[in-house]
Amino acid sequence: MRIVTIGLTATAAALLLGGCARHGIAGRERPDEFAVARNQPLVIPPDYSLTPPRAGDPTPQAADARTQALEALFGGPAPRSRSESSLLDAAGSDRAALGARSVAGDPNTNVVDKGAVTQTILNAPAGAGKDATATTPQ
Image 1 (cartoon, one colour):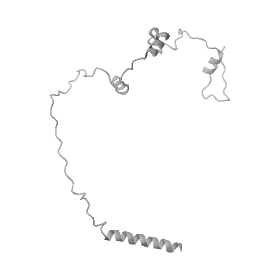
Image 2: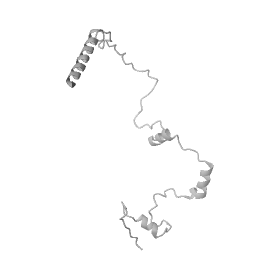
Image 3: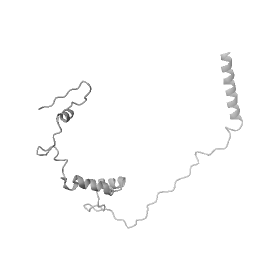
Image 4: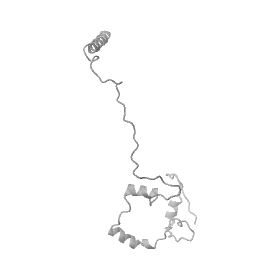
């Protein structure tokens, strides 16, 4: 029974496809893929009185590429709000050293002792899990 069903389905599919080829689908009008129009030739644009740059001349851009990229991405520095300005003034942002990040590890830098617990956390080994231990020098 199964073989008969498969045979009938295959025969019906072959008849349908044969009928399509015979009655106009294969003989329809379609565009000629070989009739291709030629492109217009390239033309040189007008001169506009531009002169090529000379070696050694400075570039006409005032800012470097990094500054231009930041300006394009973020639109330049945003103005600070009154609350942010007052918070920075209270924190003493005008008295901060310009190279503070460079001197953070200097032995003469004043630090605040946060206690043994902070030292234990800071000296914990990498990949600390439930079995990790750390000792602090006293």
